[in-house]
Length: 207
Image (tube, rainbow, N blue to C red; front, top):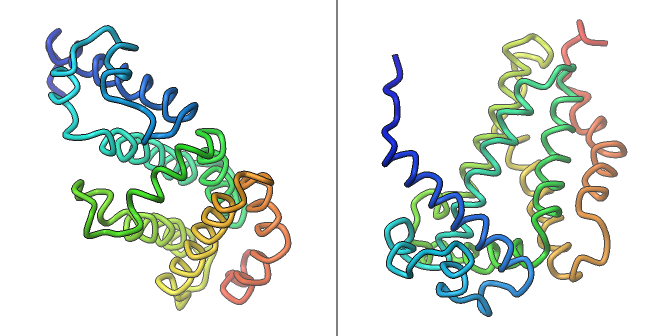
């Protein structure tokens, strides 16, 4: 049985949530470089010291936003009502769509602060690429468990290839300055290329 949270714990969670929401809004508008910790705390009505109770530096806010978002997307995709290919496309397009809706500047800041793992202090974000590959692998293995994919489906290879696609699209979208829709580009891939990529591994019983 789960332990009930105390009022103090609930208040701490609420303060952290407010800091994250304020930071997200400011970074979307100005970028992380032009956003100060003081601006974030002022937007929440708390002191600068309170910020350091939850985060070590500004970049950690971007990382925390990223972690919460992707876990929710993965869980939603795994429980999505539909066949394997529909679930996979749902996961990939929601992955891209959430990034796009959070804004170009936030995505660019995340890329800038994670592209060199040696400079990342938070363990989750140091291994973010591996986390996303494992999530994609989880999608594929669930399809194998349900008999939708063949037992010899190369889950590792496919997971790496599909994350390469999403990350490549994300980088191109960043470099274009958001000149097109990241989500629509992913939908296009899922419609035109994903079926042919996965077709050799679809179980005969799913034809």
